[in-house]
Length: 123
Image 1 (cartoon, rainbow, N blue to C red):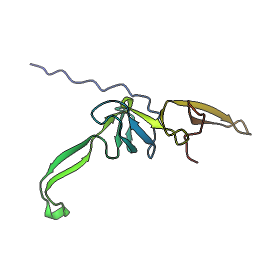
Image 2 (spheres, rainbow, N blue to C red; image 1 turned 120 degrees about the vertical axis):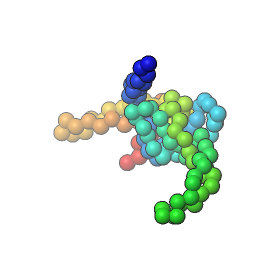
Image 3 (cartoon, one colour; image 1 turned 180 degrees about the horizontal axis):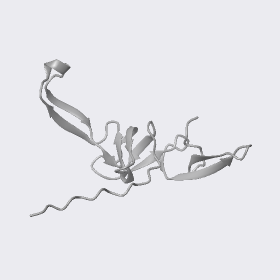
């Protein structure tokens, strides 16, 4: 009997970057705020600091200086479950994109807060 292979998920457009501050809007950690540690655009998941903590049972490995026991670490969370926190209004907001035209025909796309209009990208 043949086992059906799971087809890979379609890439999701994630408007979040590493080091962004986000607030969880749904799920078991709803209301928590944390910093984005890693973005997986292929699967549409994020690793957020102190959110979705799981316990990992680790076997000791003296060769690699790993102590055994139960370690807590973050687990990936879907990007659709979080919203970026605007530093200006300090609320979870949606992201707008503004295109700034520079001299020489170059343009730059920046992320902007939809509530107060403050730029979310750090220079």
